[in-house]
Image (cartoon, rainbow, N blue to C red; front, side):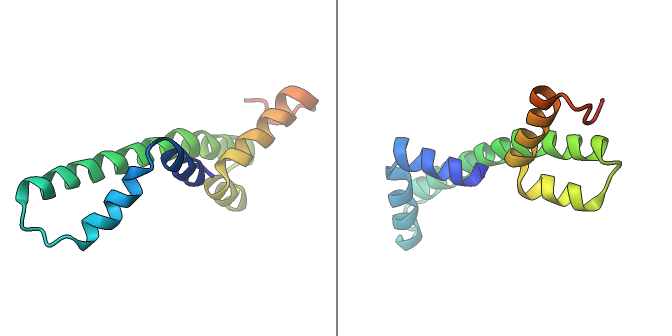
Amino acid sequence: MVLISLMIFSKLFYPKRLDELRSSLKTDGDNKGLYRQKVILSVLWFSVILLFLMFSVVPAILIASNCTKNNIGHLILAFLFSDIYVFHYSIRKFVFKDGYCNI
């Protein structure tokens, strides 16, 4: 979910990035300054993706480990569908108030 959101965000607000990535794969690499700049930009984008994943996946895994007594199935679901898992938790906990997971 997060990667799809990030790709849509990139496509809407930074559309040249995808074209630059395609063209950078086709260049010879003779210009070391340009190559260094592209590497730094790629590392920064990777860091942004990593931060998005960290802020999305870690809370879902913490909720799954605390609420389901480390059930491996719930941990895998929380990892793969973190946004949906946190949404499900918040609806059950705060809307339905059925006593789900008293942390």
